[in-house]
Image (cartoon, rainbow, N blue to C red):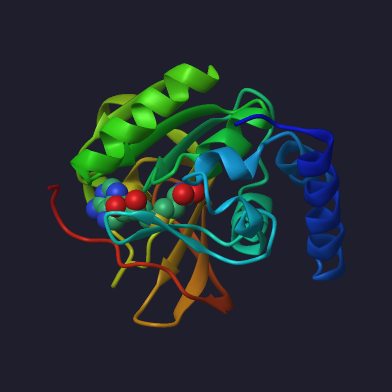
Length: 213
Ligand code: SAH
């Protein structure tokens, strides 16, 4: 599959829709304009790629809805060169958007089958996260901490402590918390011990599961 003018046209329409839904961060919109979302889904589902909805990617997982990706990414306030940890690599779409913003991306996936598939896909596409590991995102990636931003792309029952402690001072953690639907939480580390929490909109995610398989 390729990225044609037709795909680019559909992507521009999707971006207009996201803007009309309140996404205003141009760096996020520009990065999303550069990522061919249809290539992150199995061929045959191409016509779904530029609709604003989540879609199954196998192993009972989904590629997040474009609006959700745009919303979470905006909350991270990514600057070029920023160190960002992603929990739940899935299809790799969110990873690619972060890379497109010039972030250094560290990403973790707990499903072996998806991990293998997405690793091959990254190689083929030339996407280069700093680190892509198979493991349990509840633990974060302590050996690479601290991070300027941490984004969790699955619904967590609670905010995992290790993720808070792996934030740099001034760092931002964006995580959907609770059961269906989840509340998007933004946690900003103000100092060594102080964290500011903000509850934002409601979203639906697949669950953040303990351990790996
Ligand atoms: N960012 C992805 C969203 C995928 S859905 C994308 O853009 O496509 C959420 C992903 O989180 C799934 O792939 C799921 O397997 C993964 N996941 C769930 N619990 C996890 C955990 N504890 N650690 C790491 N990944 C996890």
